[in-house]
Length: 230
Image (cartoon, rainbow, N blue to C red; front, side, top):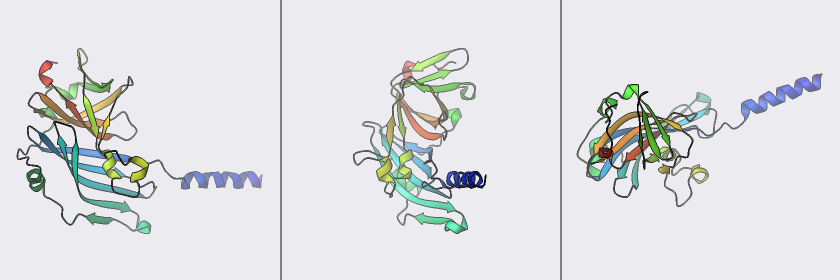
């Protein structure tokens, strides 16, 4: 009996002290755009493979709309922990830029902040958006529009870029901003903001079907092909 009791204690202790799953999050704010580029502020989060630590990082992110490449500028980080693990620690970038400075750096001078009311759909809160087979499915309950050839980009791995954890998530030839391809499995998309650039449309939101929502950028090549009178 005593043996079983000790075994239960050992198992419980092992579970409590086990390495937790890696958790990576991201939030995105659109800062400005031009006919060729869009600039975002990205905040990432990562638990550093620990039960007790959490690192938030900030980046300026520039998306080239012609070839879908990305540039990013690290702005600093903050690690939150209990006092036993060092408390809160800040790591600022000594050459950090202001938002106007970042826009000027990438030659983007149209400073805009878009909310959901600026999206191309008039009653956004009444609609459901999903991603499947690289299509955006917009459903108002009565009608559904299927938008094909949607491209989705996830900047979440900036959370581990240039750290000791990078090799576990990013191959040498990979960018920390990944294009996400969707299969036949439906993933719920929660839009937060959007902007039309010429005929193209950029959407910012989160993939909410995952255990931990991830911020993503959707690119719709030609929104003029669709009627959004839902």
